[in-house]
Image (cartoon, rainbow, N blue to C red; front, top):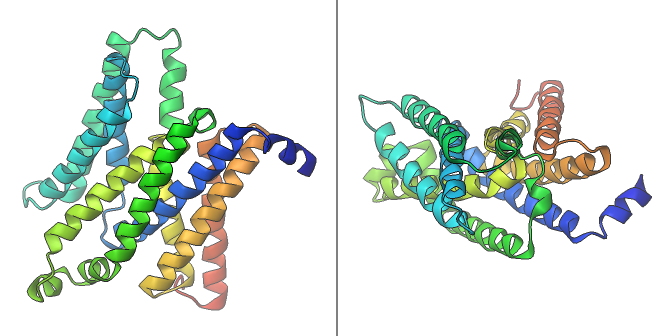
Length: 281
């Protein structure tokens, strides 16, 4: 097995997949804790469907760099979700459901009506479940992912104290001079960037798992925000790395394998929390 793994690691596309997978997993875990605590976990699911719709439009327009269309549309949708989620007539979960279902339906409709691909079902499956796209990355895409991932981590570190304050007591933070709306907007924009990056890793239907599971696993073991964030980041990186390695060796879909490893890690953390009397008890 180790000889086989060493042979695969000689190929650049395998190394690219591991680098991108680890970076995306790290970024997803940092924002995942924030989203879970704000009871906005499914924003990742909603934005992933929006990104799918934007990708369908980019495919129809034959854009050479679909990121130029997908990223702005996803960011704008994240802002709209934040705004409509604050509307008393359209609650946060209803806004997410409304936008995500509409984007997914229109995206698939557009691909069916205008697509010139001879393998439409395969293209849709790859987009939804990330079956092979992570293994077809080129060097430019890896550099783009690396730059955006570094920016996400830097923004999170610099805004850590403000984000912490906004999460646990938004009203008090506003009263003390913190611009809570601005930081909520920042969180929405950053998660939109992460969603677009993660589509190549796990596909649009499995992104929520990448965001939520590491955070929930860490919460079974720790109670403080700092400890949960660090543990979530470590678990997410380990699960992503392990999932990619397993998928390469076993020939299984990358996205589904990573999520399966995340689920197994959650089960282990839950059991450990119950045994040790941690946060999961």
